[in-house]
Length: 140
Image 1: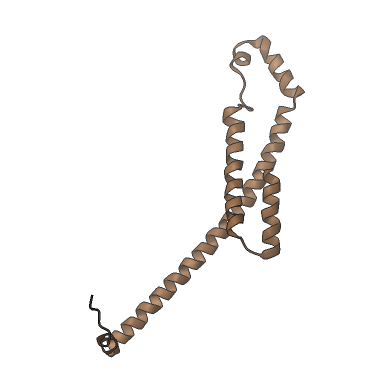
Image 2: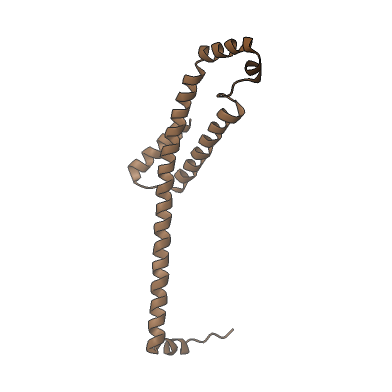
């Protein structure tokens, strides 16, 4: 499901060259779900942990290792980890693109504000600013 959602975001960005608000929302959901899955696999399920019983009783150590090999836990974990890492790398790239777009917009806002301040300063230094403002009444 995560790969399908991410694939649709990739396809849309490939076609349009940008993000819509819905795609941003989907991207953030995919990142959150990816992180949750990884945390659940490692912390809650304890896939990589050895059980206390197998750790303390040597007769169960062989059973634990046999079950681990029978169910291919290490291989399955590597496969899931690879998919989650792929999603994480793609998400990181798109989040960096979004950050760059937002930074670019903020830089333009700053440039416009500094330009406006320069125009006001020039008007004030030339004396035209007081003439222009004297025509306006700021009565309440």
